[in-house]
Image: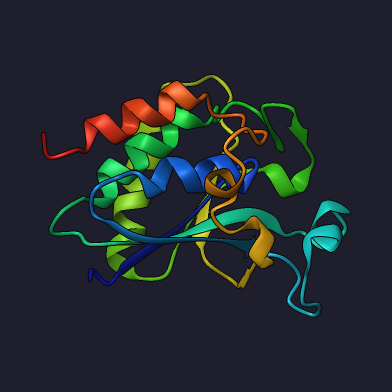
Length: 171
């Protein structure tokens, strides 16, 4: 099992978790709440209040010998709109902001270079990039949500998730 990790926030974490989990080389995904005020331990309702700065995020564990961080960022920017401030799809609020959070210097370098190139493609750009400050695992009901409820809400179209799966399959 690979040991690299990156944290991605892209609106509602259900769809982002599903899109990333279908990528060959991703060894685990986990929904949670990132980069909020660490004086509280958040739950879904606390995060939805928007008062404590947390965003819905996905911890992505991956094997860099199979999938690169660059490829994960390619997928991330395929499924989000970086020009939107604090929203994706029908979801609105600070908890739905987009962001990339690293935990090591190699990831920082890759993310900074990638984001700078991506920023140049847009007249407006609202995806934050910075070190992970904190991450609290979300309640069990949010983990693998779209596997449990295949017809659940998702701002990422199902056919796009299937196309991502095909892009990374060995066939």
